[in-house]
Amino acid sequence: MQRRIIWKTCNFTRFHCQLDQKACFESERTLTLVGDADDPLYVDVPRPPRKMSERKPYPTPMKVLIQRAKEEKEARKAQPCRMLEEPPDNGLLVPELVEVAHQVYRARQSVLFGLSKLLQVVPVQRCRFCSEVHIGHAGHEIRTCTGPNSGFRSASHVWKKGGVQDVVSFPKCFHLYDRVGKPRVGHDERYRIPRIPAILELCIQAGLEIDEYPTKRRMRPVYCIEGRIVDFEMVNKMDEMDRNSYPGIVDTLLDPDVGTNMEELRNSASLSHTNSVDKSSDKVGKSLTELSSTTMGSWFEMISGAKNIMEKYSVKTCGYCLEVQVGPKGHKVRMCKASKHQSRNGLHAWQEATMEDLVGLNYVWHVRDINCPSLDNNLKRYYGKAPAVVELCVQAGAPVPDEYRSMMRLDVASPERDEVDLVA
Image 1 (tube, one colour):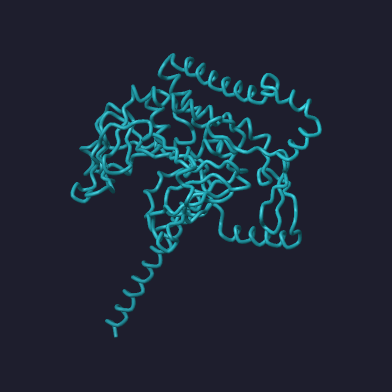
Image 2: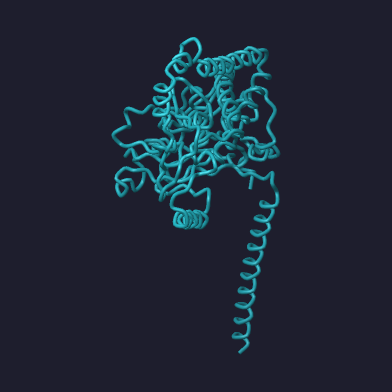
């Protein structure tokens, strides 16, 4: 009897301890989650790349997308033929975003110019077998390589010299001449239509004029008839009628010395933009610190301006690969080679894009001093990360931006190499 009482008491004590440990773990977990949510400056190191078989997360929840589709369907039933009023869905430009598009275009040119100059002073290393990039004279020793035969090298990187395209990448997309009338590119048209950087295509659709990539500008909004876009703007026929009725006046208006005002304005605008970029580049060349600060300022200006444009102009990306298309719909080119592409016959699984899909940020490990020994694999939990452009500018002398202070873990003191065994 005494043994039975002792055995029951021991089991009860063990069960009570397990409950206390579980409750303590749950309370700590909730506290950390609440603390992370309440602290706006807390930004953890970006997670490693997802598996290729997994789909990208939806920026907008699926329930919201389904609700929008139902509302649009009910609106089409209530009014089958209606004129679209809000730009840019009706084919017109958003007036307040035209200047933003020019600013993004100039900022992109300034970023590329600054990076080309900074790479002459601050070296950049890239892995031969994967997309890993490191800012410094020698590559790090963190074993995160996922390239071919990485298992034979214990996931160690093999470094070589990198360039501007390794610091920042601009994915390309098909250029649309008419984003409303013909928003999709067919599979047979993939070689006839040029591919340009997606951020450049976004600026063109928002109001930027480039002679090499013309686009259609409307003066009147389009109509939506049972879900199909119909354009009733008949500019050519009206011009022919005007010529037949008023031949003398039209000929004088079409005189090459008089009727090229729009072209002159566009050319002067483009020349002013290039001149402003050249002047800014000349001013930037004074010192390395000013150059890095100006490059980082242009980088944030480009990112913020592109985000403002993406709120109005839709950008699509594939849920499984890196393909991007600027426009209301994705293209129909069968070029997807990611997971489950056989079931889609090579077509992309289009969804809403984010800024990381439009501009490749390419996060790298933050180095306190590029002249110090390379980063140790055993101490990687003490290191922070930052976009390669930000890390390059910081190493060149620019101040650390407040947006990435927490991500770069500047408040964490990493131990030395001989203290690794002493760290718990």
